[in-house]
Amino acid sequence: MECTINWMPGTGMGFVAETGSGHFLTMDGAPDGGGRDLAPRPMETVLAGTGGCTAYDVVLILKRGRHAVTGCQVQVKAERAETDPKVFTLINMHFIVSGKALPPAAVERAIALSHERYCSASIMLGKTAQITTSFELQEA
Image (cartoon, rainbow, N blue to C red; front, side, top):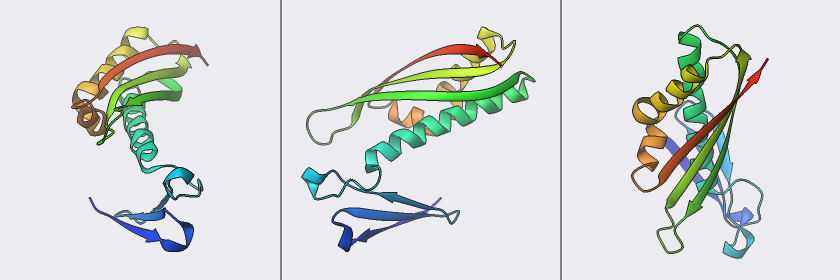
């Protein structure tokens, strides 16, 4: 896996990342750090990527279990250390999973498998942050 990040000097603290798969992602800093607030902060993209990684796992695990999953939303909230390096110290992921007659035990198991075995992002962040999860089901 690879990624190339280029600073865009004319934007203050804006950056464009080109991923190894050929996709682009923009990032920017807060105005108090020289940014112009034109894109997500780099640490926000880390958090979003982690939420995407675990949501991907949960959907895939439920589909492989032949459950009728029709939607998955993850609401991620995090706290960071107050001093540098400002690592994540607490992350809560609340899953809202929709489908037809989804067994709560299957959703709980899918979330646990993601965080214990498959989601490299959350497992990595779990080295510095306490990660908690919760979920709710919506009948679709």
